[in-house]
Image (cartoon, rainbow over all chains, first blue to last red; front, side, top):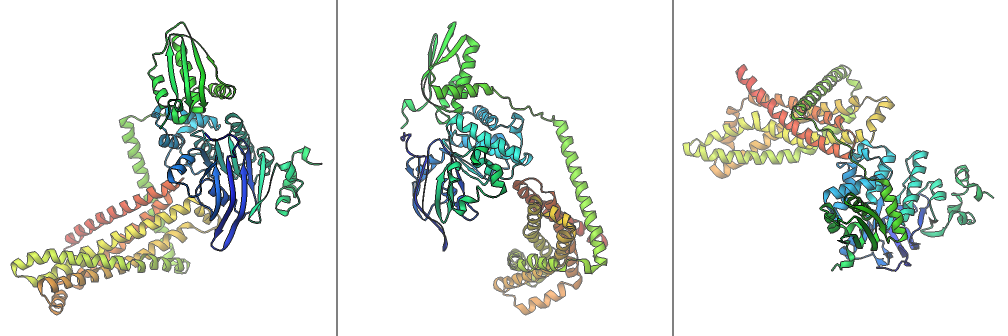
Amino acid sequence: MTDAATPAIEMRGICTRFGKTVIHENLDLDVRRGEVLALVGGSGSGKTTLLQEMIMLREPNAGSIRLFGEETVNASTPVQERLRQRFGVLFQQGALFSALTVLQNVGVPLREHTRLENSLIDQIALLKIQQAGLPAESALKYPSELSGGMIKRAALARAMALDPQLLFLDEPTAGLDPASASAFDELVLRLKQWLGLTVVMVTHDLDSLWLVADRVAVLAERRVIAVAPMAELAKLDHPAVRVYFEGPRARAAQPKSALT
Amino acid sequence: MKQASDIAQLDWDAERIQCRGRWTVDALGAVAHKIESWTGPTGATVTLDAGAVTALDTAGAWVLRRLQLRAAGQSEVSKIEGLSAPFADLFARVSEMGEAQLPHVSQLSGLAQVGRQTWTGLENLYCFMSFFGAVMARGGALLLQPWRIRWRALWVDVYESGVMALGIVGMLSFLMGVVFAYQGAVQLKAFGANIYIADLIGLSMTRELGPILAAIIVAGRTGSAYTAQIGTMQITEEIAALRTIGIDPMDLLVIPRVLSLCIALPLLTVFADVAGIVGGMLLAKLQMGLGFAPFIDRLQEAVSARSFLLGICKTPVFALIIAMIGCYQGFRVSGSAASVGQHTTLSVVQSIFLVIVADAQFSVLFSWLGI
């Protein structure tokens, strides 16, 4: 077992290029165990690319990424397979398999990676569906019959199927109405408290940033220019950071205590 | 590889159930199986000792809860002892959630299922007939006002479905001509009737093979593309967007496709006829030593303009079938990406089926008319 003190994710000297366009240059980032880290940055700043590199869908052109202390760049297939079982990913559009019911969707990782009996898998999947805040009746529905908020919850249930220690959320509240979005924020917080999850999320949602994130990493100029809790970021004077504090939307989202 | 402490374990004696090891989703298999066929302790009071559990996740907590419930069913239980604080917390939360039941789905009885399917079939037929009627009415109206037809979409589609298909249609018809001539050559040689190879190839290509071959290739190539294009537009709400902008999807997506295929398929068929005959002629030369000149002479006598035209006159009907079904199935797509695949398959199967049925009806009609 790896030492509990090693960060969940350690990224060092990451360089990413698309052709001649440089996206990341010598980027460093640590994600501590048990924290919720939000990744923010303007469009084109390479948030999604960075997330894809963390979840091993893409390899950086240079640099090292350690998940739970194990190197993932150029790792052998068995190592990658083992690491993949330790994290879950919620994709932006949910990415539920449209030919399967919600119950079957959540059961896919369980069937693939454990040797439990079918009835037990169904029961565990149902437990996860409830945990994600969906009613049991929705278990037999197909993704096309669900609303946007329910799709996100079902996708979260699938990401949580193997009880991962690390959860990646790509814009979890995008496209949700305010009530569903804040309900989803609370769900993420609750799951984090229950299960001691480490969460990395890409988000633009100012409310999520204040409510859910322990620390916020700001991507700009091809690197991470700051990693700090929102309240501390407020003191920074950088245009990429200021947009999260100035302007009517940003002011409305700030908790009263931060307005001094 | 795996040590005993790496998997979940379960032992019991008369009044104590002992849980040990990792109770996590990857290590639960054996224990979960044991609990299902549980014949545990029968003592009056039983203690559940989970002090030696080294790891617990939600799945593990759920199985532990199930164990507790089962044990409680047999004797007076049973506190759980020894769970360390974070595990006890998780266990309490999972226990709180209780055991949910899947909703019951009522299955239709055999007879009801037959009824349901018949009804769906009739409904489909009704929908297709309405679609057919709508296309005919709109198409007819547009033919009277040809300036309102979207000619650009039409010619683009003639290029896509006609010109681009020339290669494959020519290639396959040529090969078909070779294969037919080869089969015929063996028989005709036996009778010393070599020259009749021109009759065989000429008539079969122009009357049946050319039209059918071109129609099947177009159904697979273009009909499926129509369904996939319109189906994808349906899912991405492009069709709805067209409607709100005030463009009738029928005018933009259906009528030009139907008309373009009615132009392209007859032309492709002529090309298929020629390619097939060339294939047959080549084989006659190589296999039977029949020169090109006598072959063409004989061809002119055997294949009258009427036979050629009878073959061609079927093709607009085939084109209508393929384009209508392709577009219709596209509009039937709903919900998800998987639906596009299903309807594309349906579109190809149905159009090939109906093309062959229509061809059989033409044969009956022609022989009834004596032509």
